[in-house]
Structure formats: C-alpha cells, structure tokens
Image (cartoon, rainbow, N blue to C red; front, side):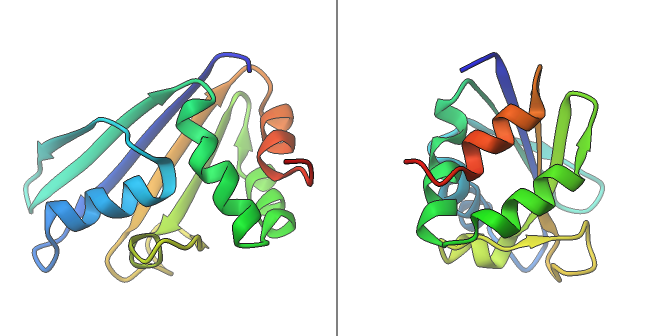
Length: 133
C-alpha cells in the first residue's frame, strides 16, 4: 500500500476516563501508540499510525458491520485534496462498533476525529470499502 499517515484525536471529558477513551480508539484502529496532552479542560488523547497496518482494523470492522456502502459515501464526501477526515462516535466505538458522526452534534461526549493522508484518497477508500476481502 502507498504511504499512508493516520492521525487520531479524542478529547477526554471529566465524566470519562483516559483508559476508556483509549479503548474506544483501539477498538477502531488497533494497538496505536497514544499520547495524552493536557488541555484547559481535561486532556486530549492523540495517536499516529503509518501504513496499512494502521487501517487494517477499520478495514475489517467495515466488513463485519456490513456498512461498506455507507462508509464509502461518508469517506468520499470528506476528501480534501490528499486528506480524508471523518469522525466516529466515541461511545459506539467503545462498544466495538462503527458509527460515523458529525464533529460534535451527533456525539454527546465528543467524537473520535480521524485524518488519513495519502497520495490517492479514492484508491484508499476503494480498499477500505471494497467487497473483496
């Protein structure tokens, strides 16, 4: 697979624990190395992944959840040059499922924000959402 960089961020609210937010991120993207950054209110967890390994878990979850067509629509609409940006519902991710959402409106505790940078976003979306295993 071509050069791919994944960046993930999620804010930890006072009613949440860092461990649960990390768990939600790992449910979507596998064992990524996380970093905790202090904010004026709480903390933010960020992670970076490189290559197809960083997206393999997401790739498999899209198949398991049978939402490839819906995911394709969301991902294609979120392309900006060489970047695909999307948000996932943090609570649903903690439960091991995928639900795409808007920035803040559809995720009461805030979303998991993901950005994927690559030379050919459409090819990457095809790989993530293709019917072939």
